[in-house]
Image 1: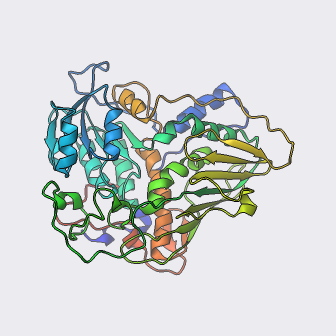
Image 2: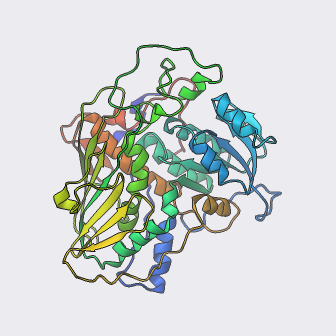
Image 3: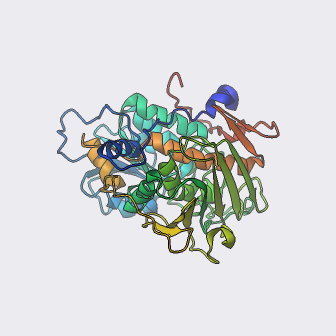
Length: 460
């Protein structure tokens, strides 16, 4: 299909994101309820799906796509349920996991696994470029879906995945495990309470990448391992020769497969920022980096997002750093920061979030000043996986569904759009354009290889 099938002004829309209720300054029962709903991202009345012969108390029949690396941790969190199907293009990973779940049927092609007649739900741990097709096929069969972050590989894909989740009424969860942490909940409580005063800037940084970036495609062509189905590993991505630099761990740094450091760590580190402010689309994005090429993300980058004022919040600047770049010491007051972190700068204090998911630290601007922190009001989470499993059985809601996951992933994708296009980006309503007027639609919707069709929801 042509990239131009979807009009750029529509493909860039972020209006599908749920409108979450605002929180008042004072802690109250009303605020507690409103903030709880805001954290879920699921519209009231979400239609739950279970096989007709399974009461809510019974175990779910689960299929897992991608059973190595991150898949190992995800499967460990599903041990309370029936894992009846396992899928991986690497027979080594598949055999190792099948030995732990001998009753599960094994597959190399997730399109075949999703047709398993007894499935209730699917968990996706495969590389980013395969998330869209796996999730869309599952939702079309009205299977509940847990999909690792980032939600997908392009703005067009995230938009259709969020729309499909609503359309088919399935329970979804974006695999962003720190969203369930008490530390991130505390960040949202402190910022939303207003005790720090207006927040004008936020800085987020990571030591990633820890995989190959800033390099061109290798010229040598070693043989494909007998255990690997390379064509299925490529999936919808453009065909290229196999090389061990891509699989099993190096794929994140390549444009065709991953989202670089921002795509990997942005969903973790930018999550408390999005949550605390209920951020919508930025108004502009600008990026700088080490030398770019046509294959991989750069060795380092700094991306600046500008957000318009909203409610009682002043205009906000969010700055992202990766590749060991960090905010300057005159901003943080610290010569050398930890490898990953987030720093909110407000009128009365700085709020430091060490690493991700850990408890935030309040640092008053005026030495000796005391900041009275709000009483906790957001509910504790049993964890991302437990939320999803319970919601699939009709109990409660997920806190990081595909609507929220779209907003979070889109923020990272927009940063990468500015980075990879080499253009400052401006966003006006549903339209995103390069400040220079250059066409950026190729960065919005990636073409799929033959045999991997678009799976869009009608009317979107």
